Image (tube, rainbow, N blue to C red; front, side):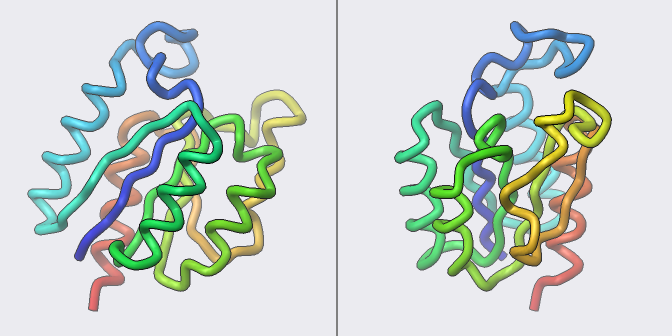
Length: 143
C-alpha cells in the first residue's frame, strides 16, 4: 500500500514553534518516525511538506494517480482552504486528517475543518503518535 503523507504550512517549523503545543521535535524527526512506522506495517510512504498552498494542491493532484491512501495535515489551511478541499474531493481512496494538537479544544477558528464531509478519518491531539495511529488505520483498510 502506497501512502502519501502531506504536511502543510508551518510544519517545517516544528521544534521552533510553541513547544507546549507542537512538541520539541522537528519535521525531519517526524518524517523519520513515519518512515520507521511504515516499515513496521509493511507500507510504502512518501512524506512531503510545503508552505505554498498551490503546491499542496499539486501534491493532492499527483496523489490521484499514485497513492492508495493519504495522511493530510494542511496546518492552518485546514480551516479555510476550499482549494485544498476541492483538490481532495476526487480522491476516493481512504485518507486520514491529522493534527498534532487538539484543534477541537483550541481557538474557535481552529475547530472548523473544511475537509469535514469528505469521508476521511480524523486524528487530533496525539502529537507524532497521531501519524502512527493514522498509518495503522490505513493499514487495516488495505486490500
